[in-house]
Length: 83
Image (cartoon, rainbow, N blue to C red; front, side, top):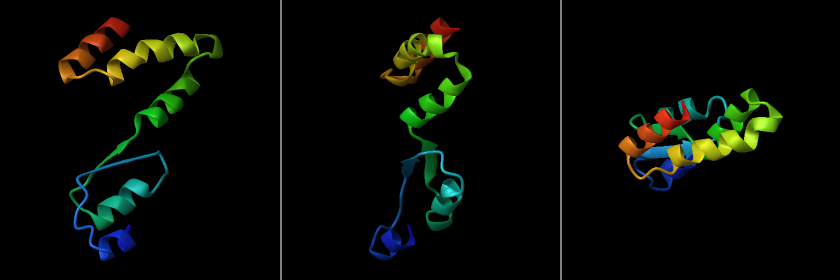
């Protein structure tokens, strides 16, 4: 990250990464105002460990309308339907 900054990358507004421990802290050390978020595939993969193997396809299909929604209100509506 420091090499990227030294090569001229002045700021990062949003950084999407996996759940590697220490990475968000490293990013915020280099770019203090950067918003760090975990990418959707990693979020889904880590949440599936709490779902029984037989239900994983159903749960993954139910989650898709949430993370593919065009607006926040559509995502919240899809979340309400999941509940």
